[in-house]
Image (cartoon, rainbow, N blue to C red):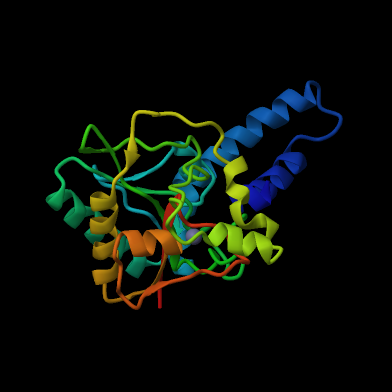
Length: 251
Ligand SMILES: [Zn+2]
């Protein structure tokens, strides 16, 4: 529970202390108390305490949204104030260029403690990292729909002519490179397709931010989208493939 939500384990301990073993209907009472405490902590306490630890809850707007409620319910939506400002600006500018189209975020960071990893990501542990969804289109028009329930694991794979990083990493023994294909939790919106134009615009806006240090996207998409900025890097075979989302981070 702590691994998924950071605060879940502590809340569970408090619950056990509050509801003694001898109490009647112990299980039911524990579940009830845990749920209430967890929700109060997640939505009322943590957002107000995290700034003292240098992190803020992502400030959502009409056009900056979590892919699903899961990310907010599990406290995976915390960033440093500088990153909060940057994402806000990127989303606003992106919507100015594409009316009604949202910037959708996935995993960011937990609210507390540097080096506390947000699994399954290796590096989302300092408030400086965030993943955002690629942009898709339907009948040639940009859409807010995404292909995966979780937000991860549906790949915009290389064509036969494009460089295939997955094959290269697998050959090196990095079996985990395309592991997120098991983490989709289902797929939907089969009528959408990857938008080169929309994703390139979003990537360019991210790269334009002065305090953005690195952006990770799969090499074949870097080439396909013609992203020449030096901030666009390869994340390495020990990570997972990035043709289902874009990762970026501050200096
Ligand atoms: Zn990431």
